[in-house]
Length: 279
Image (cartoon, rainbow, N blue to C red):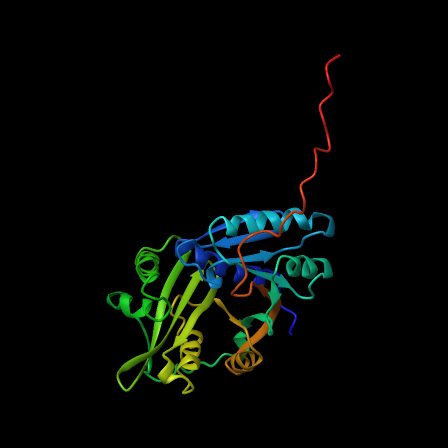
């Protein structure tokens, strides 16, 4: 993993949080973490705890506060913990039923010197606003699609200052088979939600989307691009496109059958303190 400029890394992470916020989510900062939440899109991609550093003596209150925030909303968050993970943080998460995923989550930044200057073939193009329904269909089921579509349309057509959002589409034989969203916040741009139709996977459409974003600068020039990898295979593929690993996280998640509740507190006991009695 290359030594990355910490300001570039923080800008990329901030851009990712802003991506969730512009689509209708929220971020709550507490001591030791940022809680990224989207109540209408109950998937880990939009509901995660970005751990920033929790002391051993304060972890119980931290976990209870963070989990209460999500459990009250019937959401299953993931915890992103920078590596190496502190032993007490690992033990605390396991105590509440969270387990680490097999592969780390790696934030990758593009290396401008390694970028290709050749725009990929015409199979990739920016999506048009009239194609918002087609774009939304790549990432949501019928239940969540109206909420996601509405938020996407607003952020796409009416961006806030310092941001810009542009979906990309990849075609094969005149049919759209893959899509991605490029989102810019200030000077950092992230490539999000790269997805390919099941029947078209394995033919390079996803790689073409990422390559197009780097070469065509669809949200403006002079930006540092970022993307996340959750497997060694994907990390290797992104490295061939001009990315380098900048920061690594261990992701913890709840098993599918886990209940959204705190462990029992144990048998009840009498009060430990009584007010003084009057004479």
